[in-house]
Length: 96
Image 1 (cartoon, helix red, strand yellow):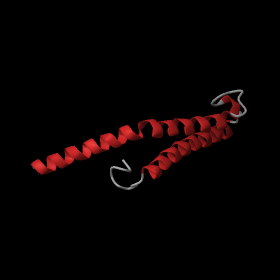
Image 2 (spheres, one colour; image 1 turned 90 degrees about the vertical axis):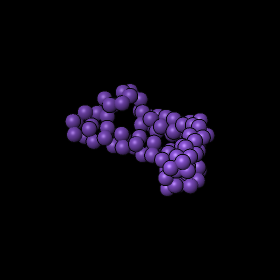
Image 3 (cartoon, one colour; image 1 turned 60 degrees about the horizontal axis):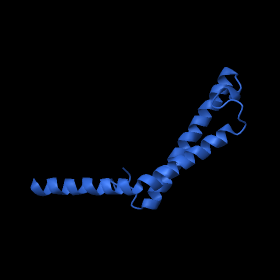
């Protein structure tokens, strides 16, 4: 959407934003988990992955790895689909 609407013109910036948004969503989840633990009086160990002292770190690493994999694996497919959509729109405008 950012590329199609020409908000961001560089694929590098788009990839950076995709990864940043994934990490931001992961951080929001951690804050909600923490606030829930504070409000309920429960230990944070009851949420997410009990027994893992590095559970939040693991979730951040997985969010980063997943978003990076998505950017690397799907960026060319996404670019092709954008190009096809733009060509179809030009064809429709030309025929109208």
